[in-house]
Length: 94
Length: 459
Image (tube, rainbow over all chains, first blue to last red; front, side, top):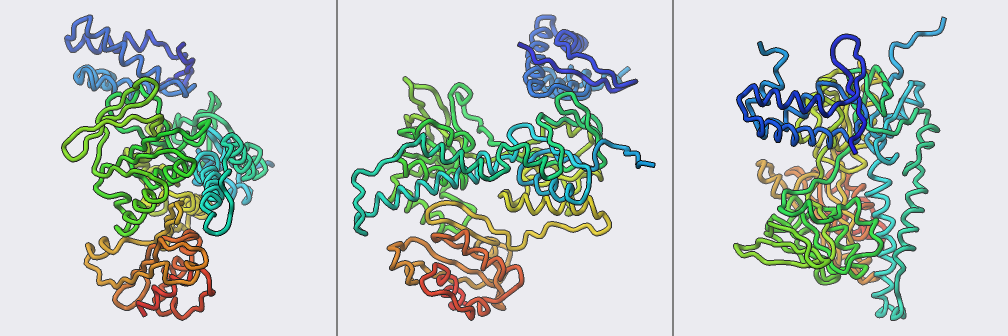
């Protein structure tokens, strides 16, 4: 069973949002596809990264969105460095 | 009009072990609003998992061992035995009696507000504990350290112990392989061997306890082998581990060849890693895998956040050093214009073996490597009368002075070495000479006579 963790959003009013596995999965897939990874590879990388983030969240009921980005980014770095760069810097990348 | 507080607390201490408790108590007594956060068991490692329980069980082991070998002193001990569940009950009683171990109320009585849960920084002044947001004007991070598992193929599929868990075993295993020769590894090895376990220690280095004087490593290896049957496999590396018909099989590479070893249990004693998974990035606190980076005042790069204890990965990682750092950190928070640095001069390091080991300063080789002119003297324990009355001869006192005879440090391997070392600590701290030490009358039939004999050789 997935741990129930909440994410404190970094911008605006710092509202809380329940951690969504699907949302993280989709963002990793999107980063992988943006660097021309195949759909299958993107899906499988996203699953590994998402599982690693969920394992990290096990004892953390509340984290920030930067935490999710950092942990997911460092795991993604192992499997697809280009996608990891894009994922970590997409806010500042045109 | 009541003063309006900007933050929930004046100080939040993260971690209730040796590095956190002292600071929380001092600040609370000074009237500060203090919170202390613990993610596991209140009291931290020392009273719950390491120093205190280990010492409690070791005392039982010493009683058992002395009685078992008492025949030559006229003690009949042929039917002697032990009941390990009762020993565990004794250990738990000792932990409870410390007051701090697992006792949240202890911290409430100190005047601090305890919180149980994983602390996670959200911003430089705010943490989340079980989704409760707590803010403070100052923080002390004292999260301690955890045992690391080395990268060995198959290790994740095998159930293994660490020094934290081995004492929770229902009974001592018949055979035990200890991977890594940290000082705690030898303490556990001697303890388990006393209760009848066949122990193997697998150490990568070419000699055991390589950071200490070579005489100490040689003596410990010989004593453990001769009196307890402990096998030290130095210059050896575990290259694979797997389950094998209810046992654990280790493949060991040694001297270019591979050998296998089957044991009931494995304990990993390779070393400790600072516990740093608390969202330090959100607070902007700089750290590396060796620990949180602090200046000489134990202040991190974020001025209102300090750190103390094992999480800063300093040279000294025993409870007394963490307490010293805890006091310094809270002093610097409360008196920023009179900041002080922890004075590690003459900080003793102890290893609780039989005979026990205690030392101060560097080894002879390390001083020579630094180009210092030193003088050394060794007094073997069998030179003092206590050795005769107790029939104990394994051990020595080694002292090191500079060229002017001022004591720089030394090593003691003796029963009660952890008590004897404080005389040397005082002498080193206040720059006394070996002659000063030799002039002090030492009680006849005390082990400390060996200190006077070694000092006299240098005076």
